[in-house]
Image 1: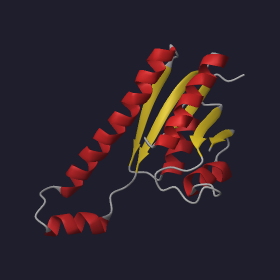
Image 2 (image 1 turned 45 degrees about the vertical axis):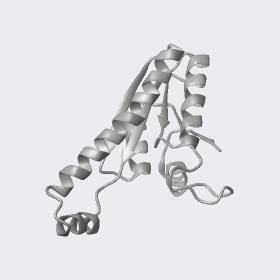
Image 3 (image 1 turned 90 degrees about the vertical axis):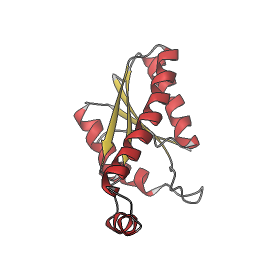
Length: 148
């Protein structure tokens, strides 16, 4: 049924449920999993404020923090996959809008399903889809399984 499942995560509790579901689905179907986490672009206003406060190399500091956060998120996914005995790979998309990074990774990795949470860290009211999830549904070409 599925050969390669992309599981999008931002490290939130709800995204963790999507990770578990994606791993379970992969195990049941014999599919491989591609975990993706996307870190956004730095804000010129934030960088300027940090620079004014005397922070040396604020852009490099932001990028290092983003890399470290992504590494921790993906490492947790990898550990869960090893325990389940499924094939996986991890992708960190830096300096991107989440929906764009998710869609591009699904295309590049030839995924035939995207599993993601209904909303992430910027979650909206429970009854509404998060804006990034809505964008993946609207602009992506790969089927999407949305978990609440």
